[in-house]
Image (cartoon, rainbow, N blue to C red; front, side):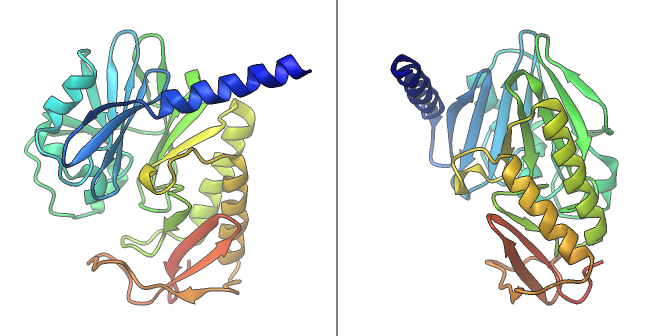
Length: 273
C-alpha cells in the first residue's frame, strides 16, 4: 500500500511538473505544455488558446484578442499543418483570425457582430464533425448558451474537452446578445454531463485558463446543471446585481449573478428565458 501511495504521488508530481513547463514567452503571451500533445497559450489579457497536435496534423483552438504574428508563434510549437477552430465568435476568442486564410466556426455564431477584421474564409462546422489529426481525433459538440453557436471539442485521447466559454472559468456569461434562453443552456449542461459520464471525459480545459490554472471536472458541470435548471424554472433566489468589468455593447442592461458551489451564471435579470 505504501509503495502504491508513493507511486501515485510521483505520478502527480510529474504531471504537475509537465503542466508547468513553459516553452515560449513574450510580452503578450506564454505557452506551456499542458498534457500529452497539448499546449496552453495564456495571454496577458487573460484569454486562452490551445494547440493540439497529432501524428499528422494539429489544431489551434481559438485565437485570443490581440497577439502579434500569431501564425508564426504557432509555428514555434508545431511544424505540422494545422487548422484554426473557434469555440465561439467573441473577440477574445476570435480577435486574431486575420493571420489565417480560413477558420472553422459554427454558423449560428455568424449572427454575432464584433467588428473582427477577417478577409479569409469561414468553414462551417456542425455537431459530430471530427478533426482527424492522425493518431487523435477531435470531435465537435454544439453547446449553445454563452453564444448560439458555442461548441466544445472532445479529445478522448486524454479524456479531455476544450470548452471555450460554454462552461467558462467557473463563471458563465449568459447575459450577452444574441440571447439564448436559460432552458437551452440547461439542456447543454445535461448534454455535457451525459458525455462526461458515458465517454469518460474527466477534464474541461476552459476558455480563460489563467483564472483557474487547472481543469474543471464533472462536479462543476453538475453544479452548473442544477443552477441552470433552477433559473430556467424562474427561481432566481440568491441573485445579486452584476457590474461588468468593462463596457460591452452586446451586454444586457441589468445583468445579475447567482452561484451554486463553484458554478456561477451571469444572466439577463429582465429576460431569463
